Image (cartoon, rainbow, N blue to C red; front, side, top):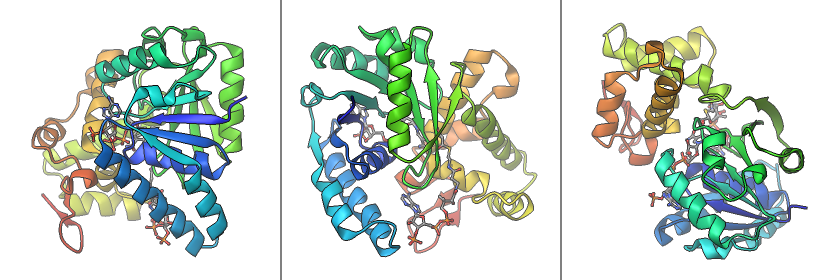
Length: 290
Ligand SMILES: CC(=O)CC(=O)SCCNC(=O)CCNC(=O)[C@H](O)C(C)(C)COP(=O)(O)OP(=O)(O)OC[C@H]1O[C@@H](n2cnc3c(N)ncnc32)[C@H](O)[C@@H]1OP(=O)(O)O
Ligand SMILES: NC(=O)C1=CN([C@@H]2O[C@H](COP(=O)(O)OP(=O)(O)OC[C@H]3O[C@@H](n4cnc5c(N)ncnc54)[C@H](OP(=O)(O)O)[C@@H]3O)[C@@H](O)[C@H]2O)C=CC1
């Protein structure tokens, strides 16, 4: 029975997962390596819950109770008695493997370990733990409080009890599941990221500028956000990591990351989270950078 949920990494996905889990009545322990990041995450959760109060989706009492259910820790030891721990640190396999190695040394043996990875093999990540049968991919979509879908990905060793517990957990959050086999980038990102990468090639080759490309897909295909705006929203470092996993994992040149995407990431222009990407967010309105 899952009652206490640990969340590792308090970036945009970590704070969203903590938000929806606390609102659904779970006790949540949010972990990050930086105290500043943890405090910023709590402020974001409060602001997003308050937005839901204003829109009458939840009451102020719900907001207060959800906030009271969230505690924070800078050490993995603080997650030792969780029933489920969801890792949502950066999309880098070596970072995730190190986290799982250190987590399993302190976590109670019966606890389930999950990764919110966008693309990395669940089977490979599971192999870096002491409990591959209790390891699963629980992949939320961004922004977590608004998106209905969660992908569930079983590794080769994931047990039925783990899969059923993850399914029940996601249902309690009020979200729908799509089950994906464990292949690079799963379902959503296998389809979405090559489209975003192609939009960046369209920009790189001068077929259109940032505004034209985003307007084309917003107005011409009724996408809620243009692909470049969405790339900035996801984070260009995450987009590049997903393309690299697709390229290496499927060994097909059609997945090669656009050199312009690489250049933006090398510049530290990671999108909204660093205030600059395909748009510059430092002023009142986003301004295209190309
Ligand atoms: C990379 C991966 O591994 C997988 C992924 O997640 S891929 C990315 C998947 N996500 C998408 O494709 C998102 C595409 N975009 C959308 O669907 C929409 O633009 C959207 C749902 C994000 C926002 O919809 P919108 O109607 O244009 O936004 P907007 O009018 O600004 O906001 C509507 C409400 O959403 C809420 N909202 C917006 N952004 C939010 C956020 N980041 N967190 C929480 N709530 C948010 C607010 O409550 C807002 O209400 P207010 O106007 O009262 O503030
Ligand atoms: N962005 C998206 O749209 C989606 C992302 N994902 C996946 O979720 C994960 C997180 O993405 P996202 O939230 O966007 O990334 P962010 O960059 O917003 O957040 C990552 C957080 O992890 C922290 N972190 C880094 N290393 C560690 C560590 N060793 N221990 C604890 N915390 C650590 C970072 O801290 P610091 O800043 O101090 O380095 C940062 O707060 C990735 O695997 C990504 O692929 C999944 C679905 C959608």
